[in-house]
Amino acid sequence: MKSDWYVVQTLVRSEVKACANLERQGFTTYFPRYSKRRRHARRTEIVTAPLFPRYLFVKAETGLHRWRSINGTFGVSRIVEFGGEPACIDSDIVNGIRSRECEGLVVLAPQVRTGAAVRFRDGAFYESIGLVEEADDERRVLVLLDILGRKVRVNVDVAALEAI
Image (cartoon, rainbow, N blue to C red; front, side, top):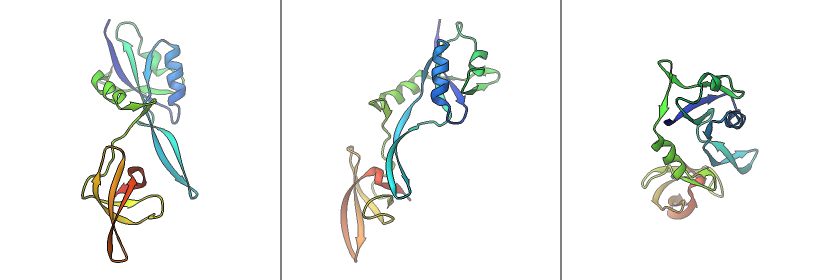
């Protein structure tokens, strides 16, 4: 029997419920999540968020499982299909996402590059705009800011910046 990965669309904020119910039926599931910084009411907190909101991966043996049972599972909206057949995902894609995990969460690459204009989303320089001078692999970025007519280098966490 051949096992393949398939994509399942869930109901709104029902990914965890869908995973539990699918696993109870004998399917293997993968629900990738990442850490993100959320600002609300002048507070910043780190929360876990779905990498693909409303979607998860299901691994199933093609001859063993019935696809209609996936669509009838609590928390599931539908299995993604093309031409009436469930859409198969290459296992290298799922393995690639899993290889970027650390402590169960996917680590995302910084979205800023050298020379890009960025805005500070957090900290003492909130809403200031600067240019990325250097980005390293440790999630730190060296940014050039124009403060009082002088160029100043600031070393900050990439999570405190957004590309503009």
